[in-house]
Length: 466
Image (cartoon, rainbow, N blue to C red):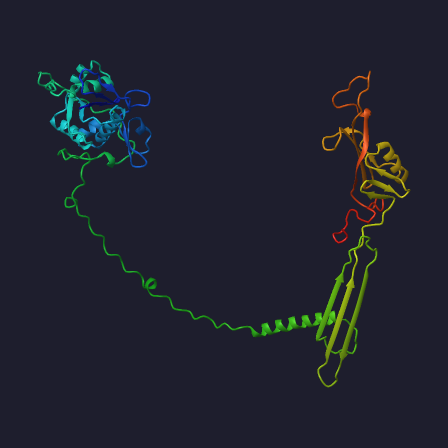
């Protein structure tokens, strides 16, 4: 089964159509562009070395070729070969059989001479197609019955699919004068320099696009520069070497520093040894001190500290020899922790407060009873916040009453509304709130004095006491 791929390239884009082997079936136009049948007439190199054809080549960073057919006439068939290979692959994907077409029909201008046609055939051969038909533009228009790109590709595919295609009759053979087409208005590639990826030449014998450099023999000879003058002797001769001065070690300074340090250390030893014996003529030669501390942990810490120290020393002096002194000191210390304070007018207990009058107020008692009992011992309160709503304590309302370092906290909710009483807003009426004693807070133990627990634990207690 022979399928023919028809191709048409011009400045408006690239279009293709596939004609089946059955002449009664119409050709199938390939959709090459992203939004239309024709793809952009562009070829470029991708970032990974692949060749981009059509709309994908418009966003390439490197040079972009926009006239592959005209470049092939000048011997640069690489871009046209890339276009043909791309369209053959696309037609194989679109075909139901999955096979690539084995015949190619490409539309060429009516004024292409034999050399230009050979370049187009060579580009098709490089893409792997050996059965190539060149369809003049006039025949493609007549067979496709339209000037559109897809119609021209269909007309070329229909003509190329015939086993015995009609003879090609050019306009010159009909006696018509054909004017050479004007050069393509397209701009050159984006980047400067040669586009080596698409510059394959098939050896057509055409002159190169870029002129070769002038031969070396034809270039005028340049005079050789004169020999430079000799450098001054001062710049060539090495400077005389200067001997290093003799560097000595300042032994006198070092010895004096060591002696001064020794005197200072000796004075420190003498002063720390004490003056127990006035007959001593030299510093103690040996000093031994042992100190031990014992801390007794009891449930009822004592209020005193017991420290016992024992010292023994012996000294011997000789008038005919160097004096020597020996001293031995032993210290034993027993320390018990001191509690913060002795409970005073108010004692902090885990269930509330205990006063020195014997009255005990507990958590849950009403605010009036607790405040009256506290004022009877400590006098009027230093500050009273009054009832206010809160979000960080249990209850809707809270009240803070302070005596020095002692603060009492009362919280509660509004009382239920009885029959015949008007409902209040959702926050309740503070005058209807029943507050209870829920917390005490102490940030000191001196005002009032003795603000501690029965065990003497309060603010500023040490770890040893705890």
